[in-house]
Length: 150
Image (cartoon, rainbow, N blue to C red; front, side, top):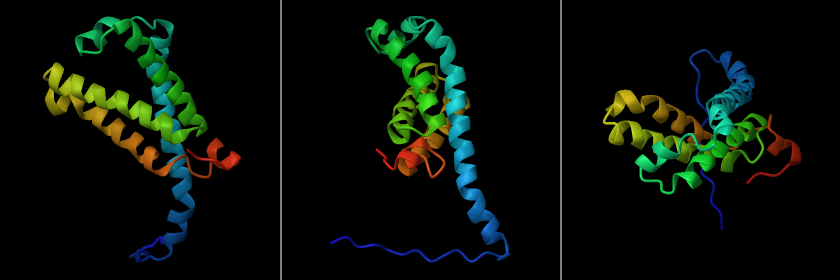
């Protein structure tokens, strides 16, 4: 038996804003998903053009052989970004790219000893991607248009 727990609706200080927030929620989620995907595509584009270019760096982080991991990194960033833009296979695309970003958190914080200052953007992007792992693509996604989610 499944039990659902209902949460009380928030009480707004300015109740008239409730409808604006309700209307803006799917638009804001879509903008965040599309922007995150676009940023990944832009960041992944140079790697797609030179898929072996990061082989030395990934081996330096312990991902051996670099000739395997470097193209995988390129494909995950670039094609994962495209999938996020479209909202197609949103959760797996967000999960895969989140893992890439979590590795960059390790790379900056630990391997390069940059701490919070070096890892901050990767943590932010990882958090955004985690949101889409948990929430999916919303109603303005290909996932919603085909009526199937992962």
